[in-house]
Length: 111
Image (cartoon, rainbow, N blue to C red; front, side, top):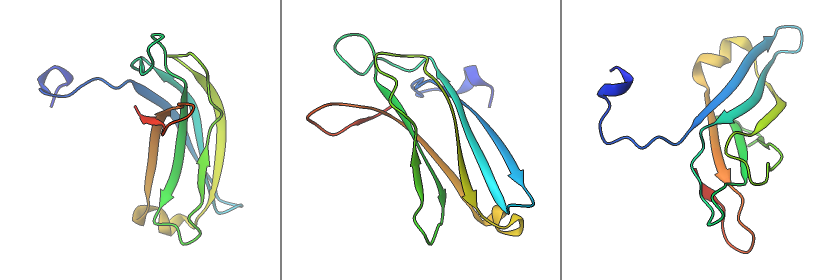
């Protein structure tokens, strides 16, 4: 469907990422570059976003998280995370990327 044909969808922003496979290391390198147009989740008109990254299924349950970017709706992260996985296993894996708003004193909001 074209973007304007999707009905009932709420724009939650965009994530720019990079994916590289390092053959000699048998590793997938996931780069979280930046987010854009994130919705405001806080009463001050901003969000305090961070990104969680996981490659599923993973027997080691390895999860990564970026730094928090306070009061920012278009944060620049420029962080890389390395998942050791054989190339032939990649088609069986799912890259789970989720953006959250950090809240102090209560659970973080999923953006």
